[in-house]
Amino acid sequence: MPNTFGHLFRVTTFGESHGAGIGVIIDGCPPRIPISIEAIQFDLDRRRPGQSKIVTQRKEADQAEILSGMHEGMTTGAPIEILVRNHDARSSDYQEMQALYRPSHADYTYDAKYGIRSVQGGGRSSARETIGRVAAGAVAKQVLAHFYPELEVIAYCDQIYNRRSEVDPNVVQFSEVESNIVRWPKASEADELIKLIETVRSEGDSVGGIVGCVVRGVPAGWGEPVFDRLEADLAKAMMSLPATKGFEIGSGFGSVKMRGSEHNDPFYQSASGKIRTRTNHSGGVQGGISNGENLLMRIAFKPTATIAQGQETVSKSGESAEIKARGRHDACVLPRAVPMVEAMARLVLVDHFLRQRAIDWK
Image 1 (cartoon, rainbow, N blue to C red):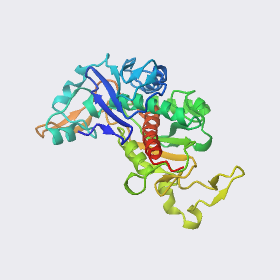
Image 2 (tube, rainbow, N blue to C red):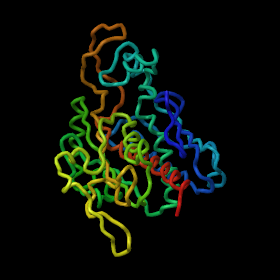
Image 3 (spheres, one colour):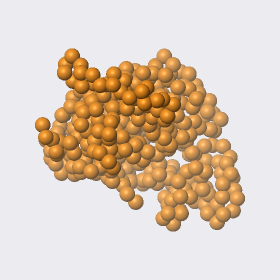
């Protein structure tokens, strides 16, 4: 079961939704980087359950403990281990799942692959596994800030169900995104989306959407040609998140409706002497390597699979049955997915930064 991501900056997540805890081991972090536990906790708080009325009401503080790899607030170069203990698991809510498979969940596929699965909370298939990713992403954020203080990663809810934000990603501000519980980039519209999610939840149903992400301040030259292209690694990172169903960068699938004369990004030299592009249909990546423009991504998340309506299914023995989920679940994963997307973007970026630094010819 591959649980490790990255090349030079490697993260291995561990733990299960209803086990003793969830965590991550980070290997390859450069030494003598100041790391704030408060900064790690800040992003974990943005991901945690129970943070608002529109997310799952599981009550977890998700308090981070750094067990190794630090001395007097600085990284030592040794592996960094971060642990978050579970406190509010209700395993009894999952007794019915011992014999029945939840539609569109990982219950059947885990049984098909391993012949055994953790029934309570979905085990490793639970979104709770992303605690380790977010914690590691918060470390990556501080490493990047040490070397590139102007680099910023901002994710936001760009679409929920059939409502699109229509915001220009180049001008999205973190403060406005975080000013509302749905993490909508236009705070004045947030109440409409909150009502939508509350209505869907009252009907025992769920909705999906799209998380947008903009990365500003990436220098030209990050990324590897051929198999480890920057956009390929970003796609793998995002598509490894639970509930993801699509990834696009720049013009994405919209590029098929354009001609080359429309889609090409003309170059020019700015007054500061920097080479720029007049448009950014490439989304900041050309030939698998960053070109210095903003990275523009959109990631599609399906409706939450676990819903409170009766659904057709089968038992492990193949008998027809109906299942209605119990427990505490998100009617829409998008608000909590925002920090997950940011974390995965940072893990890719810090890895490619270190890879570029290793061959720096300048």
